[in-house]
Length: 413
Image (cartoon, rainbow, N blue to C red; front, side, top):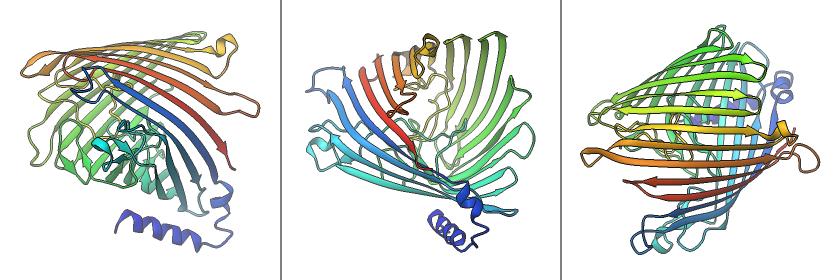
């Protein structure tokens, strides 16, 4: 039975419930609308336009209508979530598409135009017993072995089944089976592909959990399998130490081992990475290190987010045998009497990348974010974020990128 049929049957079952059983279903429900106005400009700095495309730029308006029901009364509570999304092109330029905001118009000049609009609908049936929830249908979530991406106009989603359980004290368990992915700028589901390592699959199975010994210390272990492409094993530790008033020290250590699955070509990657963050009042100082070992880059599902400390605005610094380090600074201007205003800047440098048989590849990326969310008045919850990035590489593209994002979220009930 397909996921679509499963969701349809669940919706029909909920509609047949008596009114008294549906009370919690409606009373505990919530709905909101989110508007996103997104401008994306990326300049390619590797040579004259005659050698390759020189830039990509798009401007688009998106809207997301979210509905999350409560659960029906009884031992097994049933519910339904829905996410309707639509995106409109405001300016795609002539041949400057390809930013990921809008679907490509392959009939345009050079195939680099953008479609005028697109829409997608996600439905999710859910069932709850005690503190265990099963969701089937459209899914957006984050785990150390698979995470949905939400860095463009509209989020990417998976189709499949997801189980979350918190019935055991201090232990959170997650597991599931995913069958397809819907890219940020697509209205249709498609099979999975392995980022950088290649391979196509129609099934990703995963499971694991996090145990919190106390508020300061937690450990995680996960397993993920992209059928016929790769297997991945993850272990992590997070430890946060309070030092004094408004001061703390946080350690986040991660390790992954990835191998081939099925008849896929041999695959070998080991990713050791971690960070230490020192919080001092409104400031956070962070240092991170990431090391790739083995013959291959870090494998993950294309158009999803890898769980790596040096996965930043553009790059993931996860090439074969790459070593990379990061320094970062965050500041919250609420300490100066401007709540809602935040600042972040970071620099990541990578080297030792395996290129053409030798470890000579180098790259670096610099990011700066400035964001503000209106705290009160008629414009409350209006947010503005400016994101800027610069990338320089001896083996890939040199890029300059700017993103402007204006957003507004309104709770309907």
